[in-house]
Image 1 (cartoon, rainbow, N blue to C red):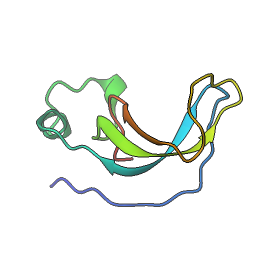
Image 2 (image 1 turned 30 degrees about the vertical axis):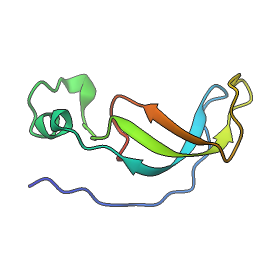
Image 3 (image 1 turned 60 degrees about the vertical axis):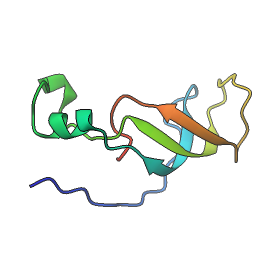
Image 4 (image 1 turned 120 degrees about the vertical axis):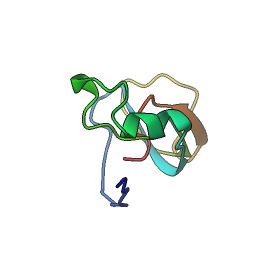
Length: 85
C-alpha cells in the first residue's frame, strides 16, 4: 500500500545557492501516483518521493542566491519530485 508519513525536521540550506522553503502545501498528481507504483522509475530516481509542485514561504536564503526574494515571501516552485518529503 502507498503510505505517506509526516515528519518535521529543522533544516537549513545545504548549499550557498539554495533556497529553503517552509512548504505549506504540495501536489500529488496522476504522474506521481503512476511513479509510486514503479512505472517509468529508474534506479536513479529511487527512492521516489511524490510532489512536483510546492507552495510555501522562504525560510532561508544561501549567501549566493541572487533572486528578488526575501525571507518570509510566499512562493510556488516546481521541484520535479520530492515536494512531499
